[in-house]
Length: 337
Ligand SMILES: Nc1nc2c(ncn2[C@@H]2O[C@H](COP(=O)(O)OP(=O)(O)OP(=O)(O)O)[C@@H](O)[C@H]2O)c(=O)[nH]1
Ligand SMILES: [Mg+2]
Image (cartoon, rainbow, N blue to C red; front, side, top):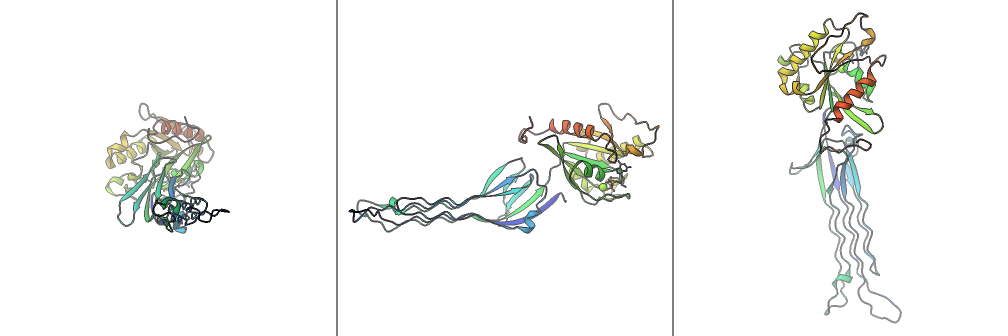
């Protein structure tokens, strides 16, 4: 699962149904007036954000979305039915461009945001509308209008709420794999993670937040050592950082300082972000391990992804911090007050 992925799709809204040319036929009324009904509207195409989705992968397989035509009008002033609308679900953070003009037509960042992307054609008016005093039997009705059609370029910029940072092997990927459905590669060598992974962490009923696991950071990363810190830009927009240090680190406090140093060299903004410290692998911690006091006001949570120790407390704490920072324009999910 990459952070930025892209896809191109074709959308075509339904055409409007034709207006009808018809005349009233009744017993004993040989020449009835015009009674042709209107055509129905063609189906619209909508885009809607769905928080369950985290990639644009589905669009690699299905690239064409067509809505149906409105039904033609009929006699006896019967209007044709509208064509059914089509709603395409996309992940939050999808930016949509018109492929022809490159213009951004939608920036779908919020939960349950919905926009009309291609308008269905209006139905044509039936001949009942065209009678005039001089022309009482119009043999004319409007055709339906064409539905809009576009090729759309979609780009996904996933916005994670929590960014995990730590040395290689600190247990970042293991943590995301136990508290979310993400299944990143895990191994006992450094730089197992080469691209960021995202996981949705479910919290109680209806609540969730997105966690990002990025490649490990080492001393000198800011100067280009290791995988470099190019991936740090992906966590610049997270609400909070979780700094992971393994309980079997030779010097927990020193490792933490090194990490902060590298973050600060990349961007001081990262240091202004709220953070918590997570001491991982507590199941193999030395019995006499003393967890150092880091900084005033910075929470330290000991956990083990293997035994499950501290995971509930970690989720509680992350949720508390994330939910306190939900932007006013970020609609709350159902059940979240
Ligand atoms: N005993 C124990 N081992 C763990 C725990 N968490 C992770 N590990 C082990 O630590 C090693 C590294 O774990 P990863 O999750 O791949 O570490 P990472 O931080 O993602 O590493 P990079 O992707 O290289 O930066 C693996 O062998 C894991 O099985 C834990 O809570 N307890
Ligand atoms: Mg990893």
